[in-house]
Amino acid sequence: MNLEASTADITHEKSRSRLGWAMVAMFAIANLIIGYSADDSTIGMLAPFVCVLLMSIFSFGHGISRYGAKTMAIFFLFAFAISWSYETLSILTGFPFGNYYYTDVLGPKLWLVPLLIMPAYFAVCYFSWHIAHVLLDHYKDGLSGSRLFSVPMVATFVMVMWDVAMDPARATLGQTWIWEDGGPYFGVPFVNFLGWHLCVYTILQAFALYLNRNDKAVGLIGRSHDFLILPVMMYGAIVVEFLSKAAFAEDAVVQSLDGHSWHATDIYSSLALVALYTMAFVAILATIKLLDRRSAT
Image (tube, rainbow, N blue to C red; front, side, top):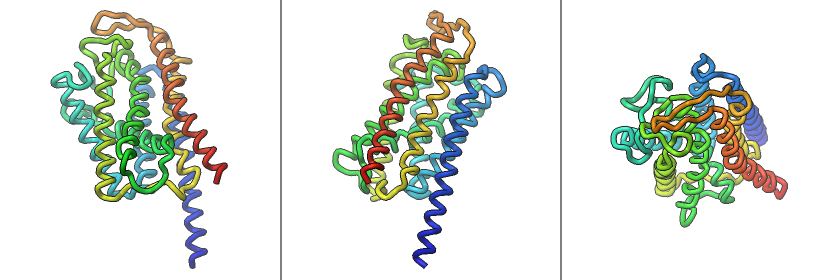
C-alpha cells in the first residue's frame, strides 16, 4: 500500500511539473507575442488579461501545493485589499505613488482601480516571495527571528524590479494609467517606486506575520527541483516582454503631461536593459543557487 501511494505521489508530482513547464512556455510565448503587437491592436489589448490569468493560475496552483488553499486565499486577500487600498488612496490624494488615474484600457474597475491590477500584484508577489526564500537559502519550516522581516524585504525588492522595468511602457506609451504631473523616469515620478515598495512590503510583511502567528510557514525541504525552480522561471519569463518590445516595437514620439517628449524605441530599449540587469539577473542567480543545491544533494 505504501509503495502504491509513493508511486502515485511521484506520478502526480511529474504531472504537476509537466503542467508547470507548459505554463512557463505559454507565458514566455505570450510575452514574446506582445513585442510584435501594437498596444492598440486586439492582441495588444488582450495580452495583459492573458498574462495575468496565466500568472494567477500558476501562483494559486503552486502556492496551494505548498501552503494549502486557505493560506493562499489569505495571501490573495492581503494582496487584493492592500494593493487596492493604496492604489485608491493615491488616486484620491497622491499618496503614496503620486498623482495618476487609470484609463479604461485594463477593463472593469472596482471604483477607481481596474480589477486586473490586484491579481497582478498577487501573482508577482508570490513569485518574488518564493525567490526571496531561494536567495536567502531559507528552505526550512518556520518564519521567525530575522527571517520574519528579511524574507519580505528581499521579496519586495525583487517585486519592485518589475515595476521599474514596466511602468513607463504601461503608462507613458500604453496609456493604461496617466501620470498627471509626468516624471523624470520617462514620464513616471520617482515617488511611484517608493510607493510601490511601501505597498508591496505591506502585503508581504502582513503575510509573513500571518504565517508566523498561525504556524503556517511551510518550508521547501523535500520539494522537487522542478517545484523549486518553476516560480523562478515564471518570473524570468516576464523579461521576454521587455526584450521583445525593444526588438520589434515601432518608434513614435510621445509626450508626458509635464511637457517632455520621448521616443518609444528609447523607452523600450532602456526598459529592456533595466529588466535584463535586474529581473533577469535575479532569476539567473536564483537558478544557479538551485542548481548548486541540487548537485550538492
